Picture (cartoon, rainbow, N blue to C red):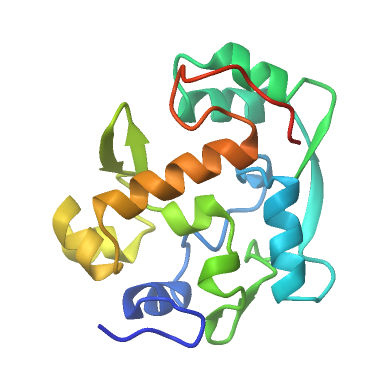
Length: 187
């Protein structure tokens, strides 16, 4: 497997040049960008010190509903973390919908400093099982078709996905596993 200077697999690098991708969003869909915790934002700023990469977005009803779909059964926790009328940080996009950190060679953020959601995509956890988003925008999904082949093509494994998912939950203010403990405030 070939990795880029920022740690991307070849398939992610190739995908970043197609469109749409997980690094590009359709105009008007910005409220469905995942949130960034303060920890993730600061980690990115340490590694990529350019400005304009973050944006404050309102906790709209559509955004809250989207996050609730990501964490079914945890709607009360999500509502406490993202109260209506408040705001959260997300990655900024340009006028064409591309992430501001998407450069000519792919993502400019080193792999270890990227938001957990970026590092997880197209994988997710449901209960204790690794799944993948059935997304036509993901080149790994289009080329590999099965979970095991996608994990290999993206230089990952089930344990790594589980670990990233737990870490993401913690920095977003959720317990590391559904129902594990009370919510802490972190946004």
